[in-house]
Amino acid sequence: MLEVSPILNTLAAFRHTTRFVAKDGGKGGVNNMTGKSADELVIKVPPGTDTRRLADRYRPLLRTERSNLRTVEEDQRDLKGSLEQLGRYLSLVALVALLLGGLGVALGAFRWVVNRRDEGARHEGGGEEDRP
Image (cartoon, rainbow, N blue to C red; front, side, top):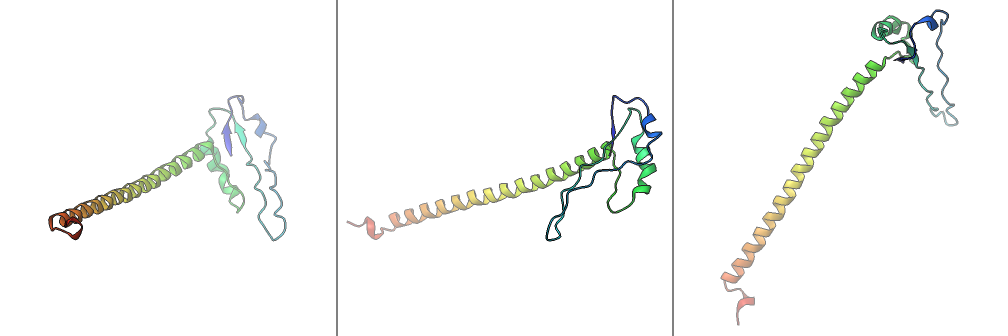
């Protein structure tokens, strides 16, 4: 991952570095399980570096199953998109809950009205419990 660091002022560190190597993850253990993922390799660059151009330049060289080059800007954009999707999903859940709650209230009110109507009919019709 490329990250802008305000304490850097040149790309001189890149002059002699030909490879950036991330640490290995944990062992998978028995039963052919997946091991712990390794921490991401963060490459710090000075402010003003066009990280998008740098990423676009080197990304094709990393097109393997286990390699990826991202910028913080790209991660922020992806996070924003994910949060927007989560907001839409939660809005839908809230709407369904509201509808179900409304149906529950309506059903309760309907039962109350039916009970009152039945009680009134028994009283008006001279039901057995009202006779002396």
